[in-house]
Length: 339
Image 1 (cartoon, rainbow, N blue to C red):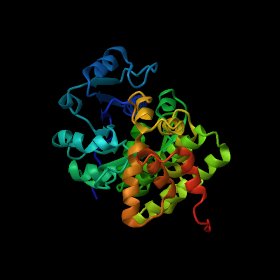
Image 2 (cartoon, rainbow, N blue to C red):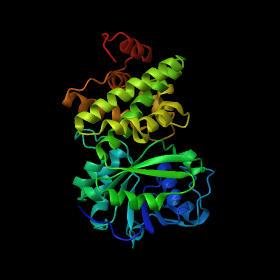
Image 3 (cartoon, helix red, strand yellow):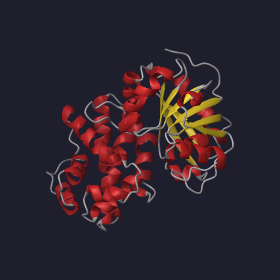
Image 4 (spheres, rainbow, N blue to C red):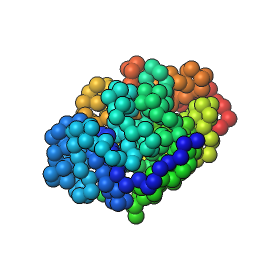
């Protein structure tokens, strides 16, 4: 097992979307020096010169400890940790650019939640294989972490999952603030499957809410959604306990309940029957990971013969033109079974 170096003082955050920028703020508020890498120089310039990310985190002042650049080599200079904040399905492409410049021993923190389409790989597996990174260096950040609430300093807890517990603890120390309380676990599989599955269940809850079906329906979807996601995770080697904690139930409740959730919001738009393309256009370009995850998780479930009816129904709405009202009928008319 690899051993981490000294304390984490300087961090590169690669990706200046809402969550990447928010976690950069958390690190800065925890006393770290942060270099935020943005693909577009206009975003980097606004962070660097105005301490604002107008495109992805409007109205939120950013600490002076955050610098920004669109120059990848500049971002990587002298860092003690690297945070990957790019969307899940773009991770492989970005790693092909990043991997030769990644420092060889520092923790690599993954913010992406998803399973790669086609390969069925979790994000840590993509980082390991494409980025050629020792899995003991990969730390997965997950939990009930709605970016805007955290950026505004509202208290939350989070989970840092890593096979090497000492590395998880090093990142824990580096990112703990009065409003951001990270816990550590070693169940990387459970953390990633829970973080992926909750976006699919949030789409289902958004559809139900858009149809005006009430809290009983939402509570049923959340509970049964947790059941099917945990069954997949356990089949893949996860600990059942992970799904009852912050990475599982905590993240699921936040994402399925909040109007800030992109996936829940998108589900509400799908409920209007406008179709996936029009619903995505209405999101203004923000990524709703559940749309992609319902495909990749469905494939993973079929491969491992795990019954996931909520995932299947969301997939049918998104990609097979199933009317949202029939999604509920599909779920309610399934054969009766013990809980």
